[in-house]
Length: 274
View 1 (cartoon, one colour):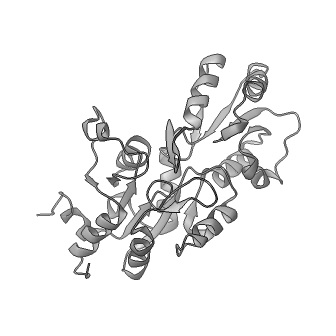
View 2 (view 1 turned 180 degrees about the horizontal axis):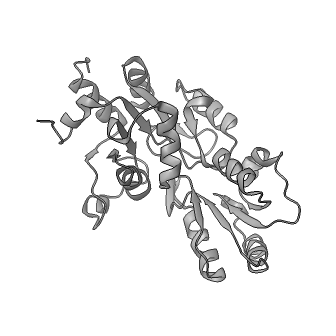
């Protein structure tokens, strides 16, 4: 009989998906800081027989600049292994012939250089940080309210995230404000969207039950992965709060102290040395 508990359920794994901020590192001034043990944990996963991908709602920089930052922190990561929302959003724009008004971080704007933004017929909102001013939010509201069929895309829907100096409001807070003001429902591109997770699984060539998601966000990382049929493990780093372990609807398959401990358990089940 198959072992469905932790960590026995990892024996049949073929792939692991990792969140980045709060699992590998904490963002903040400069490049941020790697979480103790995470650089070595990524290295050990890469040396194993498991496929590895990184799934993030990071929208404050282009994928290339973001990966370069992680490499400076000591992580062995390539651009092709990282799945952020912006490239997926651009594909949706092209497919549906949409021209966006952008409310995003200045660091993400180069991702949209080749996108037609004249006479916008939708709004894209990301983690804009200091760009979430009243003026900018009101401008996005006016674009939406002026459309016959308003379309709002949100690059993720997180409530908050952790930087080295504390917790910060995330894009989901501002997404909800625009939803309320315009009486609409945003289309989320990024975690916990099943389509977003499926794009990562397709790249790995794996089925959900063959894959494990490790994240610090109980709802968007763990819950999103579980909804798609994956196992979901939460780390007690990043935005983790003790109340997560008493959440009324999302129950992680396991909660571990950090990524290093999760990797110890996974590889231990596969006969790899800790």
